Amino acid sequence: MLGDSWSLIVIRDVMFGNRRRYGELLEGSEEGIASNILADRLRRLVKAGLLSRRPDGSHRQKIIYSLTEASIELVPLLAEMGAWGRRHTPVSRELSVRAELLEAGGRPMWEGFMAELRSLHLGAPAPRRSVIAELRKAYQRALRARNR
Amino acid sequence: MLGDSWSLIVIRDVMFGNRRRYGELLEGSEEGIASNILADRLRRLVKAGLLSRRPDGSHRQKIIYSLTEASIELVPLLAEMGAWGRRHTPVSRELSVRAELLEAGGRPMWEGFMAELRSLHLGAPAPRRSVIAELRKAYQRALRARNR
DNA sequence: TATAACCACTTGCACTTTGCAAGTGGTTAT
DNA sequence: ATAACCACTTGCAAAGTGCAAGTGGTTATA
Image 1: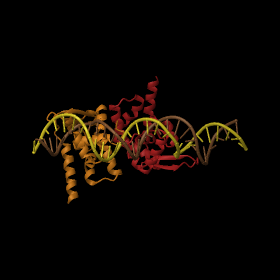
Image 2: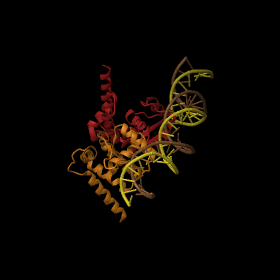
Image 3: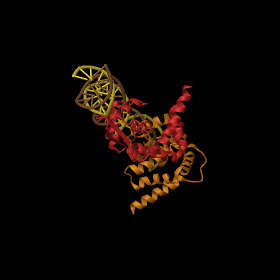
Image 4: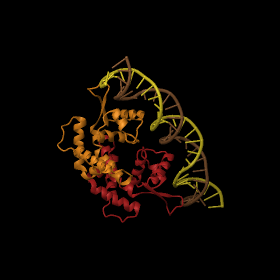
C-alpha cells in the first residue's frame, strides 16, 4: 500500500503540513510530485482506506482530503522514519527539528499528536495538549535561527 | 533509499530470515522477487550503505550480504510497520505472530534484537538474551497450532 | 576424470509506470 | 466580461519492472 515513492510523502504532507486539497499538495510539495501522479496516488490512497475524500461545502469545486484512523495510526511509523532519516541521511536543521522533537517526545507525544489528528480529520473532540503547536513552534524557532 | 516495492523486503529477509546470499534471497522470497530486480536492489542497497557485500571464505563463488549499523537501526521502523500491518492489512496468524511479539516486547526487546544483529552481522560480542530464538519459538508455535 | 549441480548474477524483450507539458470543463472573484 | 482558480486529464517519451533464458565460473559426485 505504501511501497512506492510518493504515497508516504502525500500522507506526510496531509498529516504534518495539514495540506488537505489537491492544489495545496501539488504546490507545497517539497519533492515536486507530478500532477498526474498526485491524482493517481490520491485515488489509490482513498481506495486503500488511508485517505478519505469529500467536497468542501463552502466552494462547489473544492475537495477536502482527510486522514483515516488507519493513516493516523501511521504516526509511530513516520516518527521512527523521521528519527532514522535524521541520523542516516543528509538533512537540514529546519526540516529535521520536528522529527527530533517527535523522537524525544516518544510514545506519549505521538498519542497526543494522534488525538489531535483525530479531532482535525475525524471530528473527534480536541485534546488539551497541542502537539501540532509544539511542532510549529520548534520549526519556526529553527527557521529564525537559520535566518539570523 | 527505501521508496520502492522491494528494498525493505530484501532488508526484512536478511534481518528476520537471516538470508545472507543472493540465492537464498531469491528462493526464499515470500513475494517472488525477479532475479534481475534482486541483483539491482542488492547493488543499490550496498551503494546506499544499508547492506555490505563480501566473499564467503569457504567457497570462492559465494558472496555474503550483511546488515550495516544503518540498516540494523531500521529495527524500530520495521517493528512499527509490522504492528501497523497486523492491524490494518489481512495477515495470516503464522506470519504476524513475530510482529505481535516484537510489538509487545517494545523498545527493550528491539534493543536486544539490534544487539544480536550486531553480533551476527558486524562481529560484535553476542548478547545474553536471544530475541531471535524468542521469535523463532513463537513462529514455530504458531505453525504447529495451524497444523493441528 | 567426466558430468552434474550450484553460484551470482546478466541479457533480451514485452509490458507497465513515471514524469513533463499542455489542456479540460467548470466555478469563483474582480 | 474577464481573469484567476479548481481538481484533475491527456499525449507522449523515458524509465523501471518482470519473465524466461543464458553466462562463465566453481564445487560435488560417480
